Image 1 (tube, rainbow, N blue to C red):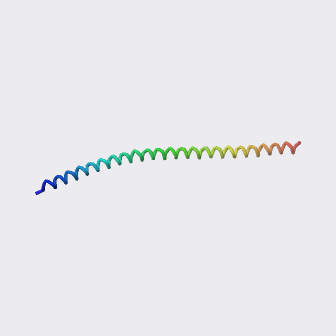
Image 2: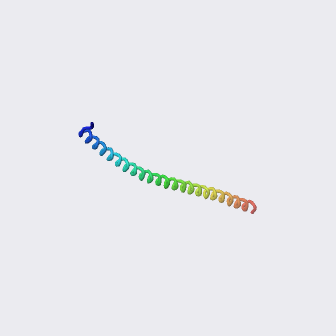
Image 3: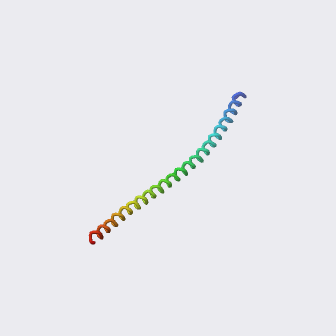
Amino acid sequence: MVDNDTQVNLAVYMERLDSYISSQNALNENLSKNLEKVETKVDDISQWRSKMYGMKSILLAIGILVVHTSAVLGSFVAIINVNK
């Protein structure tokens, strides 16, 4: 037969187990929320990085265009000065 002391210990154990399970559920929910926030921030950083790469590419293209334009105009000026 199960004595009264064992039943009390079992009740205390079950109460502590329920408390532990509920605290773990709360912790898991909190971790999930924070992980979603981190994922959102990583997505934002990734988008920002791709925008920066796009801006660098545009600036590089404009720089090449300026150099090419100055070289072409310089050659036109040289051709005009040679023909005079």
